[in-house]
Image (cartoon, rainbow, N blue to C red; front, side, top):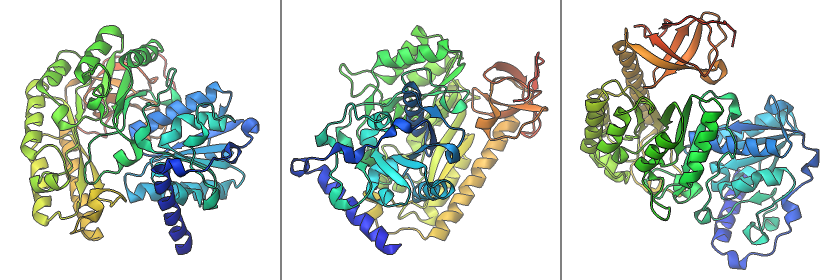
Length: 496
């Protein structure tokens, strides 16, 4: 195992050199990178990671269906499995490798194609795993449907990494900084059986946070043209979707790369003016992009979900500086105050990293105190994970693993307490909620209640059985485990 890992590391180093010495690359026989996929009848996409990755998977799925392929019910029954990977932590990498082993063991004849962020960062490492047929990085993810359908319609020989000398399976990875496109589902976007489709309008990130590998695997910030965004929103709304989630790697950076330059706030106004979408939700937004004008726009209409997910990462200014974050705790606190001033019941969530290199017990205590004194409604807590190629990987003072885990547990417990307090505070209020499919909520079938989501991101159980994708006004109960009561009665009860 250690020899294979060392070989993969050498191969990855070779690939990295090739990306930046393209003039020395030999001509590649494209036949090495394609197989006869004409017999492929079924495929299955296994997703890992963030909403942006899930949106990529939806686009790939739709394009494959358009080419005549059929979605399989599970990975075990598919001719081809596409693993759309994440690499934000070492745990995410391990999950992808375990999935490859599991799929290959269950059905050795299944062809496994690995794409996504892990594939971009360490293609040779993945190509060395038994069962992997192809590795396609984010740099060439738009070509993936063509590869699976037996063609490489838009790729040329100079785009390919010469892999013959690596003695590994076919690898299709290039310089991600040259990517200018944003992968988007060209049709309705109901892939994955979700009640709330996600539309990715921005990809990549031009920031360089010390802990983050995303700029290395997704490239520079780039935006969908505004006319494309509006067209996709219209399609989704006209197809009956009640709520649509806008996503991106750095969502509010949308438009900064366009010519002429556009602003994210202007795009939101354009969507509201030119489409009939009933509720629009933002997946995540950087704190400095949460301006007074943005908050006032949200407060002016119920069509914008009063929910702000703002990455915090740390409540210690010393650690924020070491992370190369663009704000300090006082800036973040002011954003929370502004939201509460104009939207007193809004949901406010945050990402927090436990155990960044150099984080002392005092720094951790500052983070806990900052969160305790602010009206957060939930937290997403991440244990720091060293990522190759990032500034943080070479910093001194890496925190022992058991200390990182303890701090993460404390933060998660705090997040759970914040969410429970939020639910209690909403007791007795009438809320507008969207009914969800059970499978996307991870809940068992029941004839007694239906999962639903409020505008301010409160997850509720609604008394009775309701069809998904319906807005209801419900009275919130004091206990999150007791179903809320709808002001209507389900006309046609159906077990979902």
